[in-house]
Length: 96
Image 1: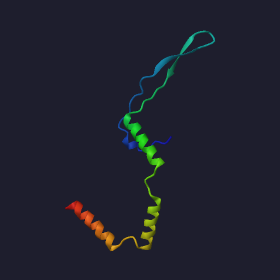
Image 2: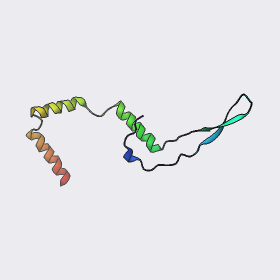
Image 3: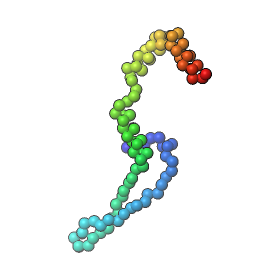
Image 4: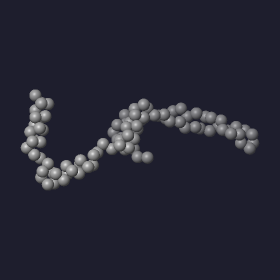
């Protein structure tokens, strides 16, 4: 198991709720008591776990597009006047 994004942990909480449960009888006929651990996860942690699973199953990175753009940048053909005009228009529409 790998734990990442530790900066999102808000606080540490005490582990509570250990329960003593009877176990099977021993050879002497007496019943022993053992500790049983339990754990519960918050709704947020379950949701984040689901999101992490979805992201690993269907990555959003379109490697074919990334590689094409890298090639265009290396060849000096990526930046064109038309692309710059579109970018400037979009930027201006957000500012004004």
